[in-house]
Every structure is written in structure tokens, then in C-alpha cells.
Image (tube, rainbow, N blue to C red):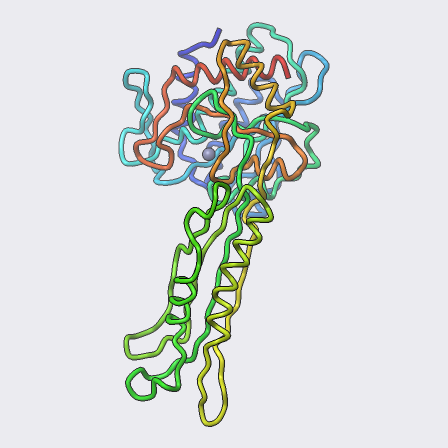
Length: 377
Ligand SMILES: [Zn+2]
């Protein structure tokens, strides 16, 4: 049913268009024409100018050939770098890049699989209901396109995102994340002449970090301090240090608790650090910025969207594996806007590296699954 050659050719065309985040104009123009050709109404939203990208998110609408609840399929058109002159190479059914670039199977394998599925539905006159396709920009930079997307334009209440490794995998849970920037302000002083008049911001940070519980906190929760920057010279007691860290959790209350625990470690060290200069007691201070990077997604295994995918797999005699993700993706944002969306494996592997790859056989299987999902949605 799936046209192996057509799917493979589609992937080659997509992969050969460089599309690092913010520079999606060329791939957007290609997708615009391609989805028109498939029979969709295509438009782009204003996200491009809002986030400083060459393109907005693409929304393609297929009226479908029967009545039904609208169904949403999401992917992203940008890639991580290095993505200059990507040359896809096919060897024994495996696509890789020719050189030191990524391949961009993340997420172009998903886009090619979707295009092939729609080709098949059209070619074989398989009835399907209204279909909405959203292809976002700047996903790799922190879901910027999805965060800016105007959800009031969508009719669908359920859907799938094509954006994870492996095949026959359903991701229905993904953690929320907080990102933190912690600035600790000590007091600068000459380290050799008058160290008693200084408060070392680096020392405070060191003591605070030593008290933090980091790494894997529990099955659902992780925490990290990823960068530490501060100080000016070896002979100056450092007055400034800046820490960047993050906490992720599948459980919102744990996200909150662990974030607060990290801040408390800093606060206790900061507020117990003081010096007396000319009779005046002076304290260290700190400032914190916490940003919710993305909300958690939590779809029960029994939810209709999960069952829809499982049943589509069963129709092809392919059991689906349900799993949790460790990171955020566009689906976190869609779920937060009231759309039940799970993430499906696209066959991509070793993503975000020059060894990235995908096999045509796996892409064929995902297209087959998509035909079944769209047909039965
Ligand atoms: Zn991706």
C-alpha cells in the first residue's frame, strides 16, 4: 500500500533543505506547495515575526472525505545544527547524512511519513474525516513556535505528534520543567589586602550547591545545576556568581518542591553570610528568576487517543508500547491548550548528532500506522 520509493524520495527532498531553527523560509515554502498539492488549505500564522523566525507555523486543513471529529497531526519543520548543506545518503535502506551535519530525520522523517500517508489515503480513495496538520517552527529552541501558536484557530480536540525515536511507541506522559537563574551577590574586596571586608559569592554558591540534592531525585523527578559563572581575578574576592539550573518532573507538586528546596539551599547560605565593615553589618544578597519552561503532559493509558493508536496498531498486528518521555516537546504545549495529543515514534535514531539515522522500512511502517490512524480517527 505504501509507496517505498515515493516515501524515500520525499524524505530526500525534505532532508536536503537546510532548516535550522529561525531559518525555516525554504522548508516552509516547500511544505506550502506540497500540502497544497495534497489538497489542503494552507496558511502560516504570525509567529515568525513574533519570535524573529523566517517563517510562522504552518496550518494545513484537509476537509476530509467523510463526516467526523477533526483530527490533528503535528510535527516541526526546524532542526538542530550543524545543518549547513545537509546531504542525505541512503545505504542499505538506512539514511544518514553524508558528512558532519545532522540528518534532520528529527523531524523530517515524521513529515515525510505523514505526506506519504495522505498520498495513500487520496490515491486509494480511503475515506477520512477532517484533518488538521500543524508544522511548527523553532521547536528545537524551546518549543517557541508552539508556545506562540494561536490555538483558537484549531477545531481538533485530539491528535498525535510525530516526534520521538523508535516505532510503535506511544508517549503519553512528559515532564514539566522549571528553569532557574540564581544570582548571588557577595561583596568584592582585595583578597590579599583586606579579605575581611569581602563576602565571596563563589564560596556561598559552593556551600549551597554542596547541600542540594541533584541528579535523579525520584522516578519522576530530576534536577541539575548546569552552569556556574562568576569572579573576576584570583586576587579579588568574588562579588558575583550566577548559576543556571533546571528541575523536571512528571508531578507538578514535586516540580514545585524540588525547585523550592534548591532555592532554600541558596537562601540559607546567602542570608547567613555577613561581614562587619566600619561598624556596619553587611549581608550577601541574591536574586532568582524561575521560568516554567513547559507544562507536564499526562494522558491516561485508557484515554481515547491512546486507545485509537493502540487499535490502529492492532489492525496491523503491531502492538504499541506506551512510554513516558524525559523531555518536553510541542505536545506538552498542545496538551496544555486542551488538546489530547500523544507523541508517536517516527523511526528516527541517534538524533541531535551527526550519526542521526532512519531506515526506509521504519518510515514505511509509520506511514502504514498513520493511514490506519487517520482512517479510523
Ligand atoms: Zn523533534
